[in-house]
Length: 242
Image (tube, rainbow, N blue to C red):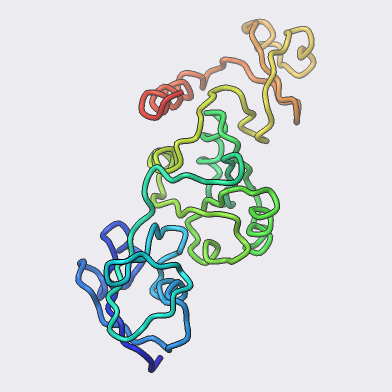
């Protein structure tokens, strides 16, 4: 790049995306090529545009398509939380690395599609657009794909923190125990006699209340792991509402 020089500062919430030399809140000089959009320039620093709430140039907010002019001072701000997603029901798509998060979102009744195999970034982006789902990922390259309908970076690699991050950012409606954690289908109440052929003897003799997935047929009951799952649900509902 050998065009106009601008001065860029990134808010602390987004500094993890940029090189260490550009951290600390101070504006850093950056030479542009004179033709690239400001959105492209910010992405070249490592910041996914899905995480940018506003680009403020000399005190005024501009679009990602703004072409920088020499001497401009740019502030890169983070997405305002809670973030509103317009134009479609709030639904998510998670990549292959976020299986535990997908199951926990489904446990809370949040519509969350999940790819259990690596189908590749182009296919994920295409599905996000076709189904109008917010792509959740820790892959910055995936979140830069133009085909995405919407996306969000998952900041932690710990499932508990990931769940709080997503719930706090998007505040989806929580409807615990209404979705299949295996396939995302909706659950219905099931009579014991109707699902008996899917149960082992000990389960048939111990439990009387069942639910079944309308999509894949999986059967659920309050088994040995229920207390742990109940804890996840109770903490989420207490903090983010039910």
